[in-house]
Length: 209
Image (cartoon, rainbow, N blue to C red; front, side, top):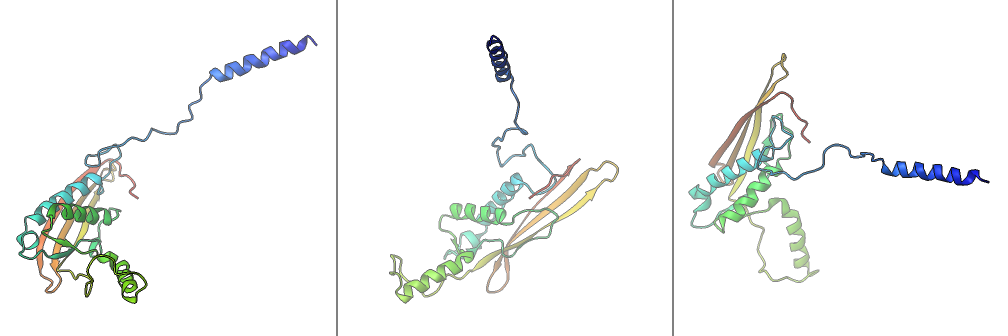
């Protein structure tokens, strides 16, 4: 019976020692916020957030300086989306991240000098129009329109790239060219064009998703 206190003391000492030991279960570095307009710790030769911000800011300023777009007597109806904005480059990216930012910036800065048509919402709008005209729902507060807005100008363009790699060093280099154009939807005239280009080089490329 005298062995029980001794055994209890050994167990207590073991538990105390285990409690004092710290095990690092962290996997990798902690997540931190970074400025999307500057180059982050993970960087490659593709199109990244700082490039998207730089190009859309530049195109926004250029478009607002185009009289036919921003200073017309009657504000034109414009469509800014990725439907005719093609990615033919080796960079993997979501085109909407470019066209959405451009549209939002223009809409805020134009201050009524342009009217923005959400062509991607046409189905949603038509369903609501049908419900109102069928009497399923009331007419709401806005006056009825004969039809949805048509577009005067629409964004088009493409992303292309030129890649090179040194087989001896593994160094990769990519030249990226992004073309933006506004097209007259009656005549197909290109009323405005903008270009954004850059080249990057790096020892190791990163994987873009």
